[in-house]
Image 1 (tube, rainbow, N blue to C red):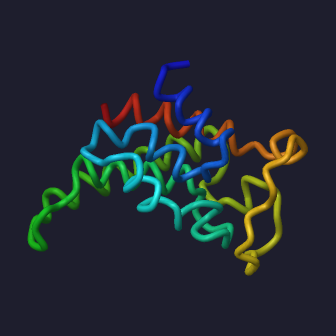
Image 2: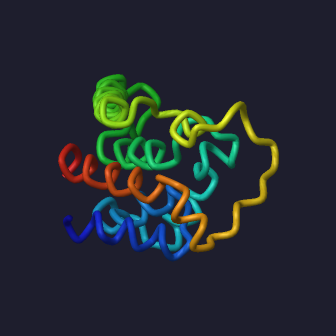
Length: 147
């Protein structure tokens, strides 16, 4: 496991959500300080604000792809294409490994969740949730694809 992948896993274990863990592990490489990266990625955790939609680790990869390839002008179609290609490749690789990029599918849950309260991070939480694995895999994909 690389140091960036280890950092992402450690951030998740320390209480970061899945998106924060992925984004913050690479933030310095994309010109973001950790505080800004934490705030910027916070709302994407737990499938976009705990709605169990797109996995936060996948959203984190997409945000990093945007930081690497994204458009700086509204009319920069080429940059948008590069970004979308990178996001699709990252998503495809994640889906190929885990069967989905949807949080509730990955966690075996039914429907969206309207409770915005994060689950307490207990030993039981980490034992039951595969999220740490998803964070590690997303970080590894970022290293393979974006660096």
